[in-house]
Amino acid sequence: EERFLEDVNNILNSGEVPNLWNADELSNLADEMMDVLENKKLPKTKAQAWATFVQLVQENLHIVLTMSPVGDAFRTRCRKFPSLINCTQIDWYNRWPEEALRSVAERFL
Image (tube, rainbow, N blue to C red; front, top):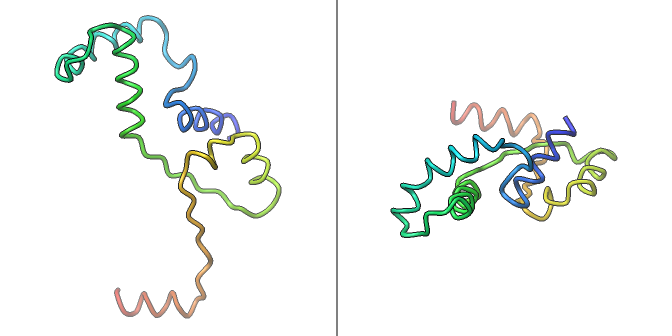
């Protein structure tokens, strides 16, 4: 889903998805963050509660995203969503020969 990639791009870039929370949810979130603010000895404001929440999300959220690098779709996605490149660790995996897979399976399984 290309729409989902936009949200992932925003999370990777800023730690949040725009317009995800309505006003009541933001207020409840700020109230729930007050204990965290107190423990960290931070000012008990809604702005600080939001900033601390976003920081916690950035520190603790891990995303595993896989896609094939073959074809134009990958190139297009990288241009449309630059955080997929700038804010991630890219691991390239090559196809293993069948003989190697069998060898590992027979040895360890």
